[in-house]
Image (cartoon, rainbow, N blue to C red; front, side, top):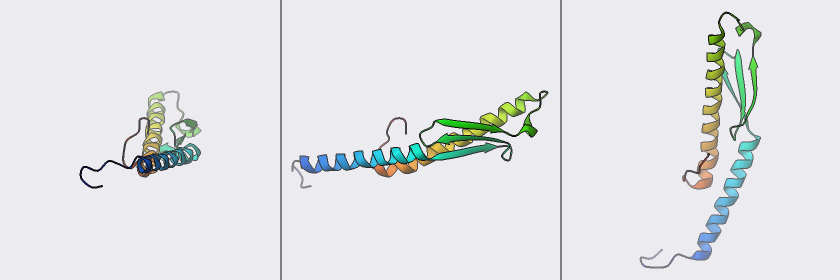
Length: 107
C-alpha cells in the first residue's frame, strides 16, 4: 500500500473471511483430534480432545495400592499435565497459521 493511501475495504473483508474459514477448519480438526497423556510408563493414561475436553482416564491395576494413594494421585496428575501439554501444542500448531500468529482466547 502506498504511503497515505486508504486500505481497500473489500480486500480487508476478503482476508477476514478467509481467516474466519481457516479458524473454523482448525477448530473442527481440533474437535476431532484425540491425544493421550501418560505417566508411570503407561500405567496411567488420560485421553483429551484437541479442544481440551477430557475423555477418559485409564489406570493399570498394578499401580493401585491402598497403602500408597499418593503415588497414584501423582501419576494421574502427571498424565493430565502430559495430555494438556500435547493439546496446547496441537492447538498452537493448528490455530497459529489460521490466525496469522494472533493469539485467540482459549486457544
